[in-house]
Length: 176
Image 1 (cartoon, rainbow, N blue to C red):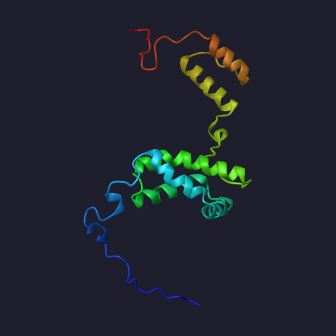
Image 2: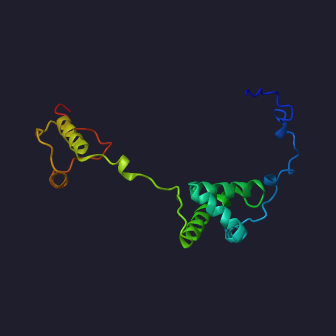
Image 3: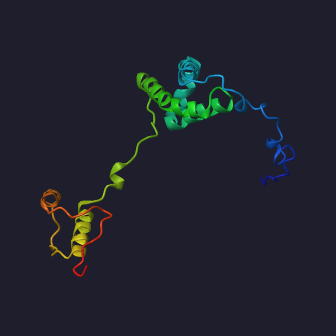
């Protein structure tokens, strides 16, 4: 069955959001909670409410990261005029830790959303040895045909003579 898409006659007119009077939107008024402590006194009871907690656990178990959940909560709070954006950013880590604690206490599996694979950006020993050999060639030193093990490379780097000057210093030339 093919559905035909008709014109959206109930869509907002372009630029309609710019025609509202200043101060009519919740985020254009002073926030209800102006400090981090006040904002947390608003959020923590709501998160620990049993009705909300069951829904929160369902969302956690579906695989949505805690960072995404907390960000959605604080963004909605800022849009409703509960707090400012900067207070929302400051409470994010506390909301994430609170949700993680509640999930741990209830044996709920969750994705924290902050896992970074550090090994992905770590160079291999072979690429480090190639880079050292390349630098030695540029400096006119003899290079070894064999790759150096990691321990020998560290010791050799520490025992070499210190280069004169820093990163931005001029190189000494024979004629000058």
